[in-house]
Length: 53
Image (tube, rainbow, N blue to C red):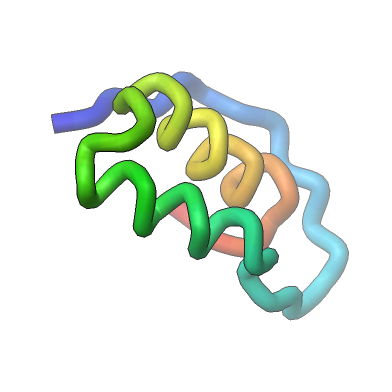
């Protein structure tokens, strides 16, 4: 389980997930980057309003 800290959201409408986030997810799923590194990608998506939790 990964805990995500509260984040301020900058809602700018509909956006696509950046390619670098896809790359981070691939690396994380094969244990090539840490949970913390991947979590930073998730926090970016939340703070950018791309995903909502």
